[in-house]
Length: 176
Figure 1 (cartoon, one colour):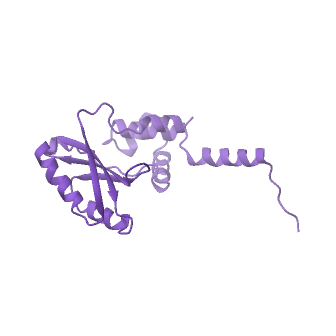
Figure 2: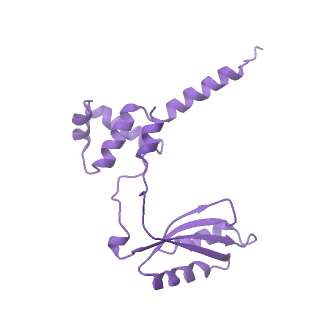
Figure 3: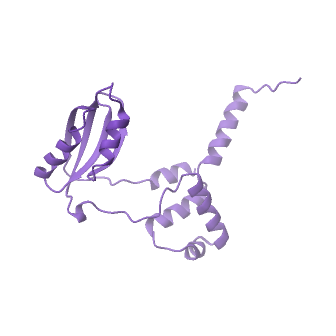
């Protein structure tokens, strides 16, 4: 029986080719940029502006969605415009014997918790939260620490957003 021997250079080439296949190409990047800048634009108009067939745009959208590159088409909502003008970041230390899953379920039930991530460092979870006022922030924090699995929480209040959440620079870099 013959065996396949792959050199490290060939292995690196294979990985680079797979990475290229996974990442968006230039047309994908242009399509994502167009949809990000004008989210209400239709597929036909995208095709016209990108000078490609409507089927090409639809196939690209389907492929990007299937691969998880595009994760949604919904509106971006401003918490501040909804009356939640305070943004804070909370580092949570959890009781290891209680586990992260119970704390995560607890956090998911708090509407003001916008996102939560497991992290390295002194804490176990990092959350981005919002509140109506600084006084209301205390209520949100109290609700967060009410979980038996939470040992301690440390909060930092954001003063002003300098760079909003963005992905287009990554799209441009990945398409190269």
